[in-house]
Image (cartoon, rainbow, N blue to C red):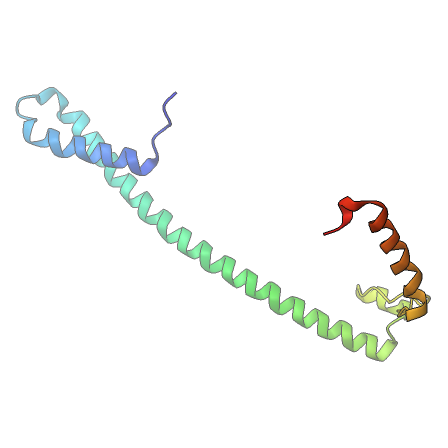
Length: 136
């Protein structure tokens, strides 16, 4: 099945037909009316193409502005959230009213000591020794 032609491809075909038919209209007077109709259609189609190009450019600009607005909004929101955490505290449930999730009170970062890491390292080494496919 043939791929349908694009609007621009059809426009080229129509222009070619108009250009090649114009000098021969005296030989084929019965095609004058259709030639005039196709000529009007091509003129309208070219205006639509130009309009579409302008709208595409405008859409690109709008999308760029939206992206910039989203970035600015995210930055401002993060600054305000940091300010609210500074005033109310990072674990305050009052932050929820502003759409800022509070940090859980009972979850603190815990750095493991060497003594705590040693059993894990030994278990991992034993696992690699038992399964040779795990060795790099």
